Length: 89
Image (cartoon, rainbow, N blue to C red):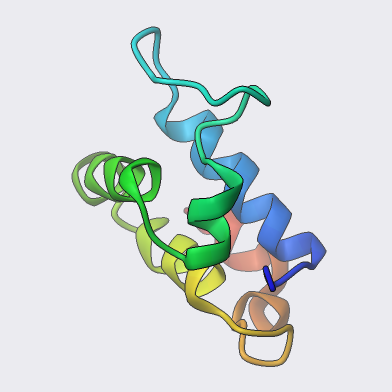
C-alpha cells in the first residue's frame, strides 16, 4: 500500500514542479508518475525525476527518496523535519 500523508503528497508535487518541462511525459491522470510505480516505489518516471534532481536539485533528492521509499508515516523523516528543510532547499 502506498504510504499516504501530507508530506508524501507534498514531496510528489514539489518534485513534479521542479522537474517538469515542456517535454515531460505525463500520465493519463496528468502527473509525472504512474500510480503503479508509486506503489512499487520504482519505475521510469521515478528514475527520470531522480536524474534531474541529482543534477539540478541535489538538496531535494534525499527528501524525495525518503518519501518514496518510506513504508509508513513513522519511517518517513519528512514528518520530523517538516517544511523547514523544504524551505532551505
